[in-house]
Length: 533
Image (cartoon, rainbow, N blue to C red; front, side, top):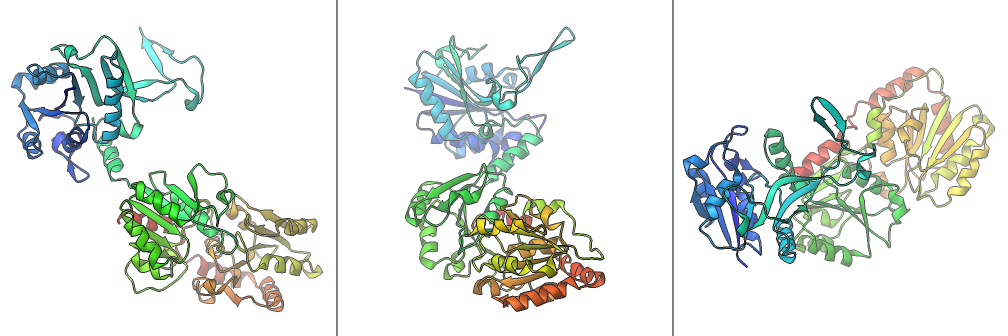
């Protein structure tokens, strides 16, 4: 079976000057179609038909045959059929494939699937690339507009509407003439949208540039009672910041899938590190992001040995493996002398909902107190505070208490809703809305403290563990009242009573300090660092 690919690339382009030789990504535009043709397991010969010296040089450098196009075949009125026929009329072959240089995002795997399809269906004479792009469309006839759909449905329920793309045009040689390349029986081959872009203007060019430069990304994240839930929350928030849909892996022995909540991200359970490493050795990820706390040297070396993994990013990694990462983000820690380790609140990634809220208005009187110790609360601070606020002296205050899905004794705590002034909420979807109703807060020394700072809420904080004792941002210096790890009930009560007596001016000064930090734009900083790897 003799299959020839013809790539038409003339010099003139009115819309985009020098289009076919313009650098896209790191190579001339025409290189993408040339490389697809060379990599195809079915194509025997490649011909570039052109009137451009530059295009001819590029083709010859890749050992590809150049057919010099006559001047009379270079006009705007000349059809592609005529150009292709001129290039192959004296060549004996079975199939002719037209590959447009303006479709750089087409993958050779897709091209080969199409070739294999037509070879296996010999009754098909011509196969054209197409995408399914259903819309509520209209037509016009004699000045009258009318719909071409039967029912107004959401797009995903509309019938297929296949549109030709410029990616490839495969036809039997016997049907290639000066006037046409269409055989008697034609079909279309559906390709992914991202492979269908045909560059016709500068917007198309920019879209292709973004697609070509996009990076495939995988996350490995775990969350549970001992590890906390913030890793999963951060992973999902960060995943929303990329222009690709990453794969998110978790260990089924450490993490319950339900903790990811209702998400359309690709959540993939794996049974231990060996399975993860096997997957990573097969999949071509450009970046893998670990949010699993400290890593070991052995784990990081194993990741590096997975040939598909090009860059590694770790979050909150104080382990020996951190030095093997290309980038480490430790927003909860304040100091590092290693250039690849970025520390401090500037890299904190907040939930996107907080961007829509302003700091609370400091009122004359304190009426409502917010209480939350994260998604797991391993020290059971929530239990202790609930027992404390049941006292009569707090009956004139309202308390909003938020607990997470990883909390062990959820139902026992929800029973505190019996008290009229206590509202215990489980797994809230809009944390800033609940915070905005409050005047002061009690929390641990984790991510919730950063959120309360965004909202400008005077806050009492305590550490869940030794690790949190090193989370230095949530400190008296930055506007918080920090009580250390596992403070006594007496100290918690005394501090709460003191906060309830703070006047408006004092609380306003606290808010001014809390809101002096830019905690809303950390995600963009982190994504920029990752994209620059």
